[in-house]
Image (cartoon, rainbow, N blue to C red; front, side):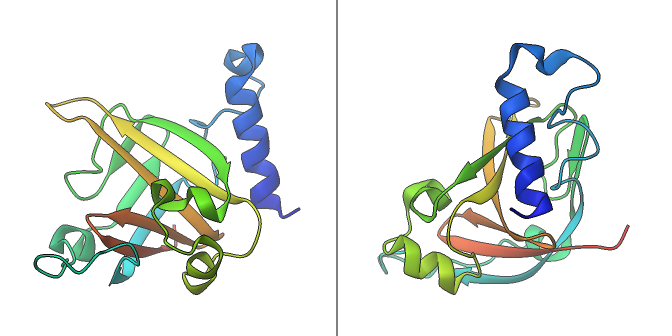
Length: 162
């Protein structure tokens, strides 16, 4: 089991544990979270679940030019992601659970997107401030690559040096 997957299992288990609030226990809001840091969009592509109806989806320019930063107690980046009090949850999903279950051929599509077989770490960011009610899932393809499905697009983000 990779170090990142082992850490996420510990985060997920401790977040559900009654002892999760103890200061010495792993916590998804602590700096050790494998998703914490700065990420920049490298590519964007039309999602495999897009049905071809209507205008072709386009990349949101904010996601192209603005890095996303996940930190304990704050997230920043495009307006949709920026939050002064985000709620983070790290979980493990299978290809069938990626992008809210929207992949038409989960194993094949996940592999084409760069995910290895088995369980995949996912970070859910929720924010309900400033008239915002947002819930976004970022799936980790590798220690330095996460993907976000949004508005029939899949954004591939790369970790930026700290």
